Image (cartoon, rainbow, N blue to C red; front, top):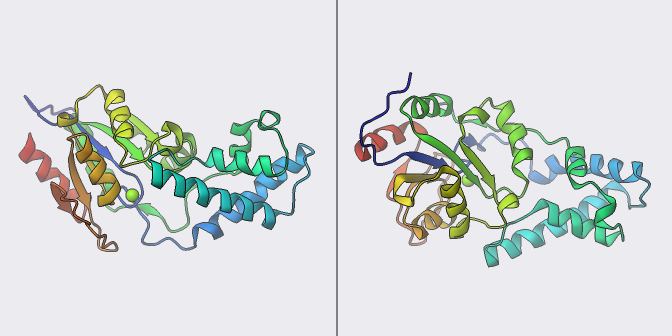
Length: 253
Ligand SMILES: [Mg+2]
């Protein structure tokens, strides 16, 4: 049943994903340890197509080097970090024309999935169920460098994909938080103005700073395992769990 509040000012809650809705405190390995077996799959994909590439560890080194580069450039310029671009640079190293590879198939070869030890915060389902019941739209804006469909694999495994009215990654949009363009993209998808939504995220310098750049309220998610520097950013609210959002929204309604 939908309990729509009359004259509700805030119509949508837009979330960051990592360390906002899903909890990385229990992550059981490094990102590199997680990725390298997946890059063996990518290596297999390329050799099956008949391309000559180095052994998996060398291929992995190249992908990681290019990944560092695309992230560095993204953070400097506000352009989107893109796994696809890192892979294109790797193909270029081997003189493999990009057109010779079906990029989606190559990405599927990763066999992407949830990161060992990462789980939704305990109250995530309850809070998002409540927001849906109260009639809020729910958006997701992540700085992930993958296309959204890859992170969707995780959202499916966590049984949370159905909550979202719209969801985008940096890899898809070509912009990275705090660039205003990625916020405007989400607002466009939700058909809302900035003062009709609030943004919830764990990084002051990205999530909150970017929300403020478009005059959207920003709620800092500050779970116990994180202690991020504010660096002059002033969140409108700070919560240590998702449940604390609900009274804040009641006050704004
Ligand atoms: Mg995050």
